[in-house]
Length: 335
Length: 192
Image (cartoon, rainbow over all chains, first blue to last red; front, side):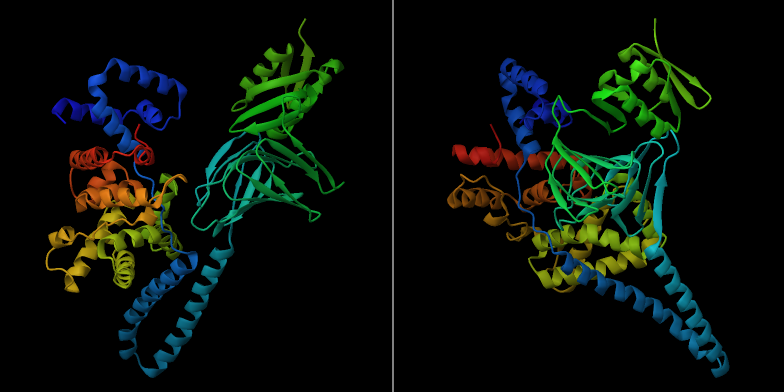
């Protein structure tokens, strides 16, 4: 391959659109590059080489079992602590027996403090809480990303970020760990969501928990002990107070409201329910001047990074006027 | 592990946090283990060396300097440690000797992921073609597609330039493509 083909190869490899063509992942890029190749047949060699470098060779990767890794880790940790001890030994020789006794007592004391600390840190909880109207994007230590809507909270043990408590509303993209098949749990007051790696939305407001699955597969363990398996595109609602379960496939007719990566998506939802969502997320009270507005249906996506933008999107799509007064949102028809 | 959480874990590790150390260990042990096996073909030796390597890493955490790419750092320093270890054990007399050895980065048919219509014979052909590449070509293919390192990271690990990595990969695939006649094998390589 000559000099110019060489730099061409580099250009291809650094081009994300070329990459999607090679992986056949984007229709537009595929059309573009197919045409480009037709018009540049002399560059075929560089194109094919670049393509094979991108798609590469698929390997079956050998992954050691968790047990094996833990065993090896323990062996290494032992070596770390035994080295720590060695450093202490020379001290003893210079101490008198009496001081040695005190030193021993002190050492035991220090040991207890150290143990106490590790014990405390092992059980200490991490919690993330959003205020009204605040949206927080979090990366958990295991790589899972969580978008927390306003007035919501997640809590988990410092050492196990794959078992979390949720109060409020959040969107999860769980990082799957194929090597160990490690599960991920979201606990709410009504149910427990059991996951391997997937994307879903959980809402615990309104005295019930809604779970909507975007991708992958999850199991729900309801508070009453019943388990449910969900497939993508399904919506399950459950309340432990009245043991009522609804399990439905989301279609264009299904009314639902969900919150995905910072955007509300409503489908056939009454304006009253839409406003309920905002009440929770922003901690405001809603007042309808024109009662019939409550039943007006809304479908579409509304960004809610910011209350003003969110409200003006609702105003435009429903033909209403929304006024903010103190802590209240007042809705009336535009004339 | 994503970039920012990895950075904070590394930071905690340098501060002496044993939990952070354990996380790094659990995240990379398996990958480094199979990489080491490809070089030494000796599980016991690889595991001994990995233990010594991680203990060394912990003891010298304050003197490691600024590390920007943790994964490639671990690969490059483990590679160095393993070669040193092999030399001490008198398995080799010089570093270059490792790469003259034809079993280094040898692939087995079981390691190739293939579509169902693939027969064992064809998998064997592809394995043979791979094993006919030079040891360095095989290592770059291994690091890229098995360990998932970027071209820049491979350059770090193999102590060669970005351009050389690219050349090596390009040569490897050109060789593979010219050898491959059967349509099915082309499909396995996902070449048009």
